[in-house]
Amino acid sequence: MRPPLLFAVSTLGRLPPLERLLGSLDGQLGPEDRIAIVAQDHLDEVRALSERFRSVFGDRLRVDASARGASLGRNAAVALHADLPDDALVMFPNDTTWYPPGSVDAIASGVGDAPAGAVHVMTDIGPRFVLPPARTALDTRTVWRVIEMSLVLRLGLFRAVGGFDEDIGTGASTPWQAGEVTDLLLRVLGGRPELALSFAWIHDPSAHVGGVEETSGLTRAERTRKLRAYGRGIGHVYRSHPFPVWQRWGFVAAGALIGVRRGGEYAVRDGLTAFAGRWEGVTGRVRGNAPTAVRR
Image 1 (cartoon, rainbow, N blue to C red):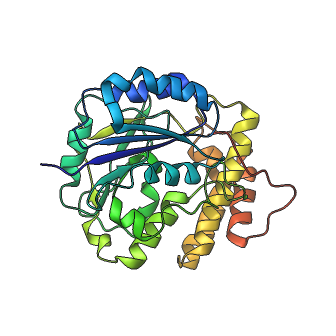
Image 2 (cartoon, helix red, strand yellow):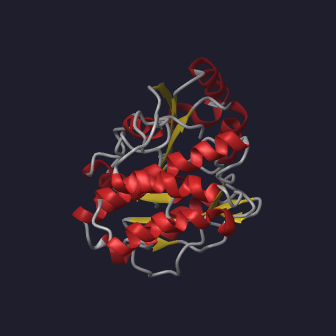
């Protein structure tokens, strides 16, 4: 019998994708699996939507509200099911994430007895990140291959480090608008260094989640703003943890080439924006009026 799975969702109340997420879990949950949704806008509409699924999920689905910030919302979502045991597995889907048929059991099977793992997030144009081969160590290079909706983590580990740092991530009240899952994993590794060699990179084609591209639905102005804000956040994580100097400043320098490496999403001139945000994060010196919350 597999351990329970908790799906902890922070949402701004985008109902169509949230409905797709809930619909995708219909028929895939075991009796001990849970869903927790924390709405940071449109709470009444989110509650109404959840009631439509009450006959499907019953008390396994709980809804609450919080102030803005994805990290805050995820922490609050986990707290809604405080009765789950430490060996339960928790995932952090965005409201734009969904679970293809058979994926929930395949993900749990892929993790097996490991303390944590990661699955592919598949979009219309391919995976958001290509995972390293199985048995690759989780370290200061490979940790960047894990994003929030791909992570599968034992609930006890999440609790032991106090969850996500609520001053980091999309919607936080600081300039550091990304990097929260990397920061979380590095803190877990600090207390459980054996996780480095037991992290499960899950390549089973059935064990993946559906998602959207990072810039999907954004205007050019929103995309540029997000690029700089995310660069600040990731740079802040590089500054806050003991990364090698060459890796930290290599990240900053690589920002200048983002329009070349990711030409389908960004223009060449966007390299200056990425470079500026990354420099601000790594140095901790934010220039001008840094926006805090960005659209997620």
